[in-house]
Length: 397
Image (cartoon, rainbow, N blue to C red; front, side, top):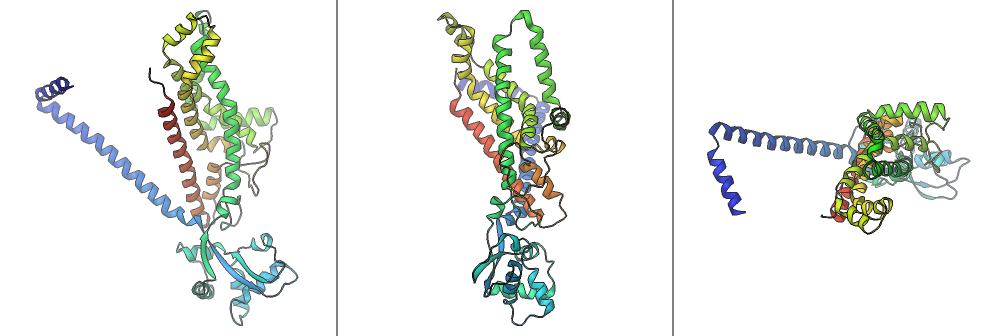
């Protein structure tokens, strides 16, 4: 090692001044690129976190129900009127608008007592300091209720347990998460055995007499890896929906579409993992009398499995972030409840982000940023898991 270092020092001394300056310039350029990239990523995550952190809290209003009226709506309105002494007609209208319209349908009031209501998105944004769309009368009332601790912020469980809604204050990602689990899970079940089988055949069982089959498969795999993702959506729309008549917006259609999308990733990673297995392993197994199939199943595939799983996880991470193919097959449905089967109408988290970003309601802006944070966290976890599995189970030959 000392000898190698001495040779490097001597070689560096012999470099001409021009070559040394070029080397230093390239080194500074590389470091500058890394620094700029790190700075941009830091600014991106800080901005995203600043805009989306508010979605993880929710503004609520405590009201005292004194009497039960003929309907839940009237009961809630009367309870809101009791927050202010002798409210006039204009004040009553402003009080009614402090509560989300969904409170009348989601809350069941049977006995008098203290009830907690979700505040309207305008009140929520005012309390969080995002924007102020309250009237002068509503602003005064809201400030008074904040001082009395009747309007306060709490952890937003609705963001995690609710599905999509027209009201941003109660919209959540649960329906999109379930749709993503169905879609990605079925996509892996569809693509993993086909991809591993294809890679195993090309690397372990292909003979010279049928070399054209391998060439044909390799050309198609390379072409599939270079095809834009939206083309897979057109394929799913034309073949799965129009030809086979599968239900539109179903998780099953999205799973097959994304399964075809990640198939080249799995095949290429599996072939690379199989090539890393030394030929001596195969020769030793064959020398002991094992067939080619037994050698592949019991020796080669277990040795290559860490690399195959790593490539599969990377393919899953890519599929989770895809939205263009799913838009083409109609997975943009307005999902009020989480799908119970893969045949139900569903959406995924990237599509849900797209729908919220396209909404005119300003209250969905922070929900969009928060959902992006959740999606990025899932992608980072999957990539870290892939690296850990590779380090943990990789065999050093």
